[in-house]
Amino acid sequence: MHEYSIVMSLLEQIEQLAAQNQANEIVRVQIKVGVLSGVEPHLLATAFETFKLEGICHNALLDMNIQALIIHCRQCDTQSELTERNIVCPKCLSTNTQVIDGEQMLLMQLEMNTD
Image (tube, rainbow, N blue to C red; front, side, top):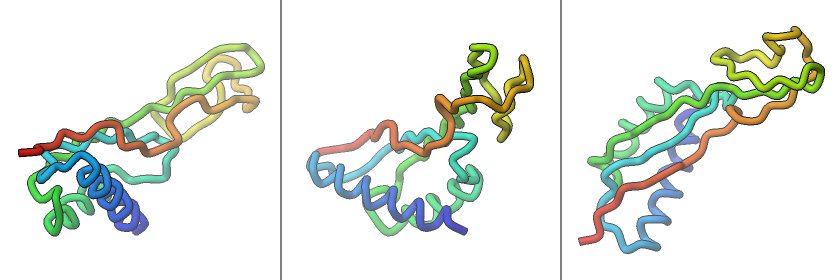
């Protein structure tokens, strides 16, 4: 389950950002998970709840936004938003598409306490 290693990397990044900002607690972690990121949201949430207990995120809430897949069709010049793992244009059924968004997992925002 690679979600464990993803969460460990995420927590390391959070620890570094907390240290840079002299924070003593992380209140909320907001991430964006793309449909094509390869990350299973429920497994990621479970891993976060398990591993957060040992560090600065012990009381943090995980706010996960699922990013739909956004593609641009080069055939019919249409941009589409898809919720499944599919890169076929729904308008003309072409596979000559470019992924615009939805294939990454990103740390979007941290809410920290510094007192």
